[in-house]
Image (cartoon, rainbow, N blue to C red):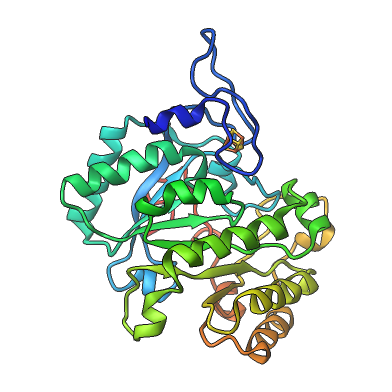
Length: 316
Ligand code: SF4
């Protein structure tokens, strides 16, 4: 099957917009993600802000796609998820760009950031990379809002999944990301990811670098400790303490939020409450970014707050 057919009557993500993102009657439609059937990319390059088994010494080879199926109101990458920053690329041009990055920087993996709405092209990209002998692990850096059907299609084109588990609270998910079904959908998606790849192999083997598996991330939102605590409890109940989790404290109010509590960074106390809960539950592998460290970064030089208008968005 030609994967590009999937752009017709699009149901690539749980939004199931049903629009034709390819030409139909001379017109292309746009769904919630804001994108049609032409890949658009904001940046290709190495990045050193992922968890240690993903970043390694030489960095993770990122591809940042334009558009997003979730479009959270607080998105730290809002310039590309909602601001439409990025440029159209032909697939062959993107493949060349990946090869240039690998040759120049010797990155440890190819890391696809929010690729969901371009998966038909991503499947072709991975096939072309592999045909040309590039066998680096392919990382899916995703929101957690994936459908099991689409994940089934991705199985042979993915090695590592880094899903978020953002919300345990449906009303928060509705307010901030317009998806009240997020808690249920994301848990089902993570079940499928674990079925396909197991947990992050580096945790089990003690290796410095991951080649396969799942690591679940959770961004702690200011004023929403309860959401974080319940999210961790849900993950523990579903998967047990053997699930690697990453607690992220880099939240920064990139623009004014309607929800007043989101107009600040998280406090050290908030972080400690969440971290302590993760430890008390009994998670064996907890990756952390301590907020004291995060707050030392000024807005313009933080490795976690990219500016995609720059040639080097992370200010290397
Ligand atoms: S990928 Fe985009 S168009 Fe397709 S279902 Fe999801 S949000 Fe809608």
